Length: 288
Image 1 (cartoon, rainbow, N blue to C red):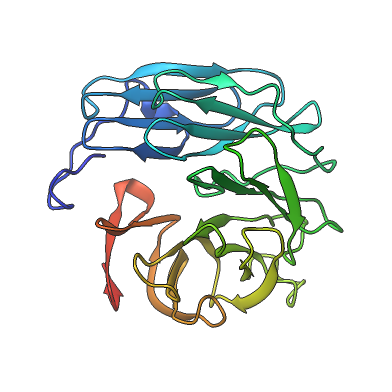
Image 2 (cartoon, rainbow, N blue to C red):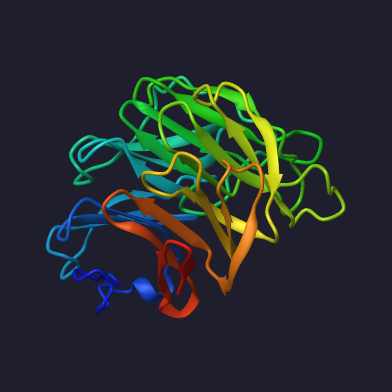
């Protein structure tokens, strides 16, 4: 769906045949140019340059084991898409021309994956800005979830282990960074191991090198974002929505709508999506 009037009206711009595909992520640079990721096995990336009137497949990867989960752009030209591990290492595809063309990045310095490590196809498991990027993983029981970081545009990566536990139905569901040092990841709460669907936050203040456990949300939350222009305010959505005004240490619910994704941008506000084409825009203090 596309809006060019702040959400007052919408039109369907789904690529031909797209109703049968599982679109994981969309990244737009203006009202005309966007790319969408049809993730999973036999992944495809579509691009439009005319506001969704026409779409072209600009990338495909049907390699055994490849399963693309999310994508992000450093700037208007350089972007990444991240896949589950192939041959023991997490796979990346990259573009340097605004999404017109993509290629699998085969010379990336990537630490080996833990056996059974994957990603959560949330669309917000990868974040990028400047030359920095971060993605979070889902690990098996007994291994805490990890966040991978690059400081050189994706050429080399390191990882940090978070306090968020691995296991069935767990994983880093979403990441958000308000600047190159301060970020948040949400996943299962280690303080309640009997309920892997209860969500907690982990915080970093050193660009992803170390993470500390913060507060638990009031229910299952699967996507998180900083409120634009606010250094301490975060919104998390899922089976209901929470707000934190102390940087993720405490959370309180404010809405019960099921919204599996949220993104907040300076100048555009916060937008969330739900099933059946639902779109919601946050007004500070309440949402609809």
